[in-house]
Image 1 (cartoon, protein in one colour):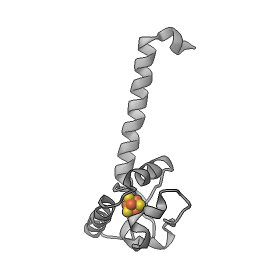
Image 2 (tube, rainbow, N blue to C red):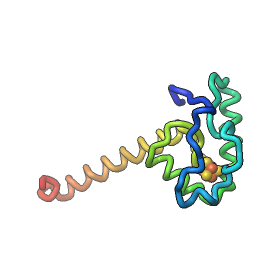
Image 3 (cartoon, rainbow, N blue to C red):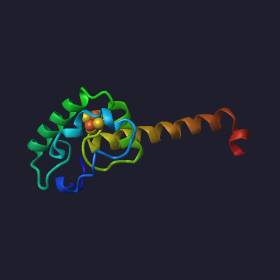
Image 4 (tube, rainbow, N blue to C red):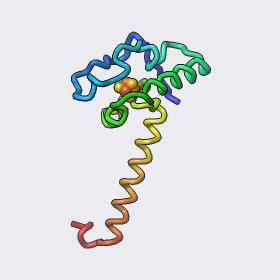
Length: 115
Ligand code: SF4
């Protein structure tokens, strides 16, 4: 769960100049569906996030949007069908996997790994 909430008024614009954005389903949706208003109760947040995810599920650029949000990383809002908390989980898994691959490479070839 995010430790800090962002007001809808402070939400970043979704019309950034990115190649996939012209196909985004959410272009005309209210930012309020994708970003939390201040002091949003938990039940309302869960309901809003599920509604945003339903929009994302029918979006043709969901994969591009999700990668964008992971690479930035975007700290707030639903992007590519993932909440900020879910994106943090994905990023943590990716970091763990990278470390495991490096560890395996060092074990397989310690001389090369030593440089
Ligand atoms: S995946 Fe969701 S947040 Fe991303 S562009 Fe599509 S509708 Fe918008």
